[in-house]
Amino acid sequence: MKNIKLVSLVKGDNRKQNIIKALELIASDLQDINRSKNILIKPNLTDIKKQIANTHVEAVEGVIEFLQPHFPGKNITIGESSGSAYYRGMSTEDVFKYFQYDRLEKKYANVRLESFDRCNEYIRVPIKTAVGVTHLRIAKRSQDFDYKISVAPPKTHNFAIATLGIKNMAGFVKQEDMSTIHGMKGGIELDAPKTIFDKLPKGTISYMRRNLPNWLVNYLFRHFKTYVKAVKVIHRNILSLSKLVWPDLVVLDGMVGMEGDGPIDGDPVELGLAIASTDALKADGVGARVMGLEPEEIGYLFYMQREGLGDYSLEGLVGESIEDVRKIFRLHGCYEVQREWAESGTEPRIDKAQTSD
Image (cartoon, rainbow, N blue to C red; front, side, top):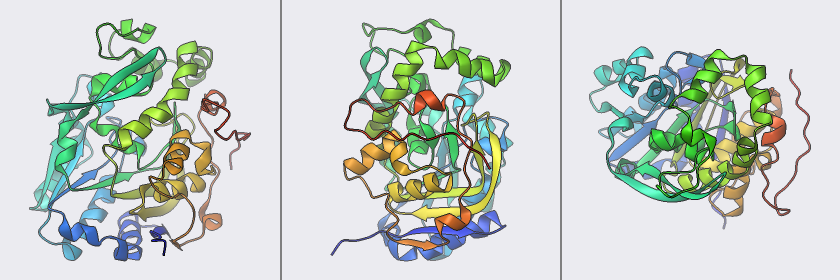
């Protein structure tokens, strides 16, 4: 008999209680935690100032408060590497402190914070770029955790249409390689072909995004050949990365999502919900549907389903119905280019107009 994993969808006006209830609804699927010694909670702290771009500290605390009575005595690490901190010459520790993650380390004796910025051993994974194949460096530290929990908000994305729980695991990527996973740079090999982005000073794109009007940035990218190629390869790259750092549990904090020019510069969408599943693909599939998308519209989810890494069907859904909580997110300004991610005639083409509530 097919073992169908549960996926919970909870609606309420209390972030922490939403998370706890979502986990309670799938408690029967969480028994692997009993055999785990070192648990990772991976938040999304992609920006240094904007709360709506990041995982709220109360969402992580909700996960901890569920784990403490049900699985006592476990070592819990909250680990992240913040891209915006890297480009601003700051540290992930600075971001932990700004968003009050340091209070969790003080409050819970078995919880510690860790910045993956400080990793110095990496695993190389082959990936594609706009100019060919190169390698991505993923922190070897990722292999030390025997249970990985991704906690992230649902957001639109500037390359991959949407970012949810699985893509959140990209925090293990060495920050210098982050543009490479997006397909924009040639790679770390000295003889690898280069793009113009290899020649730009560090943080140039980040600076443009912060200081130029969004419409201008989107216009430039839509007409830039490297970007057009990059949106086709990023989905394959996320697939390659995810196989090494696959989350054992995804918790989506949908109290507030992000639409428009995510994953940093978008606008808030009030949802008031939480999603949880030990099938990461199932959780992200529900997250996509809540945003008004279908999972097969997002290339990396389509590839993962096709390779049997999970199941984004709605079998096993408990709690609310999709129809009762769905809001149609306004997609990224470059969505019309992003939706052309299919590399051959074997992938689905979804003709979808951008709409908003």
